Length: 304
Image (cartoon, rainbow, N blue to C red; front, side):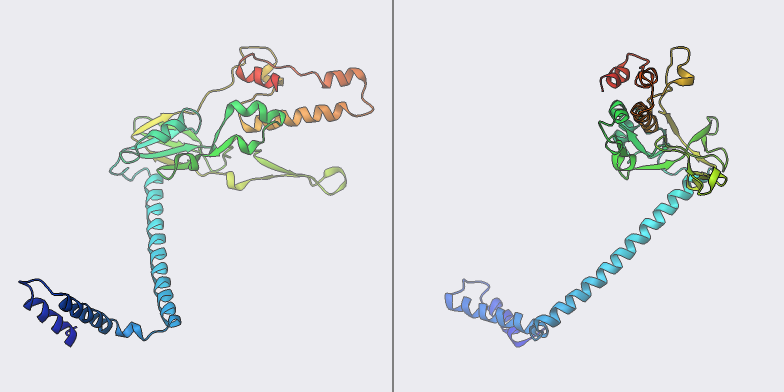
């Protein structure tokens, strides 16, 4: 880039480096610099707007394709490496200690949100892939609140720093620090929010071909997982306080499926009571509800 204007500008600057420029000399330097830049960009000055736009769009497309391909390859390699290291119990855990949390309830979610993922490799294992707002279950059971408003995806709550696996832990080996999930390939994982099978009614008379279709996607093969620290936050079972008949005849209110069953039972009772052929005694029996338990859940359900 040794153009005549560039050489002239350099000579002028060297000659006047020890004294101040006059106004006329500054104008000369300005004109020389402008001519120099015009000479340097002479190959782009001849391009019209359409040619320049096509060239820039082509360069942008090339950069986008290369960037997306690189990112996709990186994500694929990272996910495959993590899955291989996690599912193979013979492999080493890695540089960071692995913390495995069982459960996605009130005890597990706050811990998952506040643990430092830079220091630990965090893995959450639970058959329920969402967090359930249990205080709102009485409202769901009577129809005041819809089901989708009381659940939140566990992945959206804890973010990408926590790796979630939908599975059910069936065995813990504390000596070797290995957990086993889903004892065999026939076990069906239930999230507690829907039924495990779909009933298809028959189109023939008598229902000879009625059948049950099992959801094969819920079948999980057995796998082992190593851990350094294991946290069990799977919750608790309903307490009947040894009241006779509760275990056999009552509806529990612990999961989404329980709320759906109660809502369906209440709706069926009202619809059956509205049948014209019902006797007053049977109608009174159908509209008679009993709540067992005077805690927060029982009181709120009775109020709803």
